[in-house]
Image 1 (cartoon, rainbow, N blue to C red):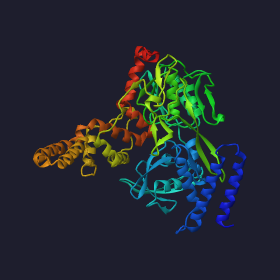
Image 2: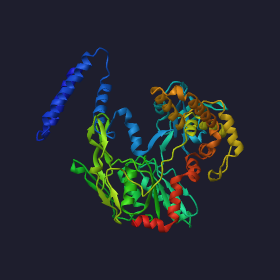
Image 3: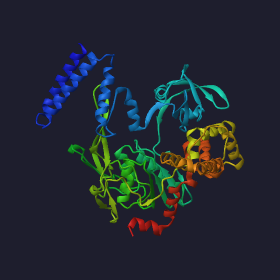
Image 4: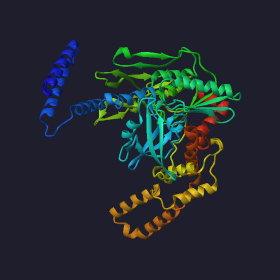
Length: 548
């Protein structure tokens, strides 16, 4: 059957299916536009000057259609189904490591502790030059992901090039990889526990509950807990309810969902006894805390169960539902909005009323006030506002450049390949001599950057030129620029404390993986310091919770 006949047949079937919905006011509009689309598709497929890929055309059309709705309604082809499954479950078959594109090759970025890559002694910075005897030169990160993934138990042979060591071959078996929702928990000090939650895939609630139980069992002096949701983009709604249930007793409503289809209207309450409903709690959030993270942080705030610290959250109050489609394809579709215990929806952007194709923030005049359990005022339409706001932390320009240009990464790689061991993470510190070694290592390497002052001077020069003042100000301008460059040459010493901190985190992660990166950051983490102080000051903690 020719393609155009197939299209006509699909069109007839589509119209036939929609005939069951004649009661709908927009039936004619739907059927008419399906017919138009089929006609356009047929003509392009038959008459376009170059050969086209029918499947690719359809996917482009579907993606564009869904993009016009919101960023969260997505279509997944059969080839993309594994990636989608990973988003939902956190599981895949592979080597257990993140990777990163660098030049013509892909390198190992961070191996997961206890999984095949780490057990085979693959290290951060290892350049992958062959997989199963085939060169990987020119392959992208997406290409390499497909090569490295595979069924658990299948064998893979990788040739790598290790900085300062040379080429070596590693042969090992892939495994089922389950990325942990809680990559780390431990004690900040003798009284304060810490739980880092990075995702909401299956068992997120159980992992948080188990972490808290372990902290309580192993630390008789435990008096308070920090739950870190910073950078957590969300996941499964019911796991958000389970996480709240760790700190809130049975039978408490955490969230409800409401959509156009009443079948999507549901109320979600805690199902079990809390692991601990009384322990003082601080929750850390930032602009990367979204969706399920906002359900957790918002519900705990609405229930006055903890103090929120950090920056305003992302503002995603939409719920997506998975739908299986034909030919092993599937989609994720926004079906409802969620509402937290006070009754507020924290969705920040209005996708139903776009201006020039862009969703606008919900107008202040449309925002409403709500109240927490203890009658503290909170607002909808703007994400979750923390009880205690902290400034967003940003690295200086030199540190940003040293990170983006791989100077810090490569020094840490070299350090690991020349030092067999370091002290435990919390005790690890680079010496002044080792920092000087880093300064010497950086000499002559390209990590050029523009300071904010340089950018301001550049704008000044442009404006002065435009207004014909530059000739008169030339000497003063050049003198300022020269002085700035001389001062800038001392930035490695001027910002030694910040650079040293990042270096220590990177080096420590080479030996103790993500756990080390987290522990090494404790001493210089603004939100953690604020949380520790608040949890220690019971009077101030209670005054925030009670709204006094």
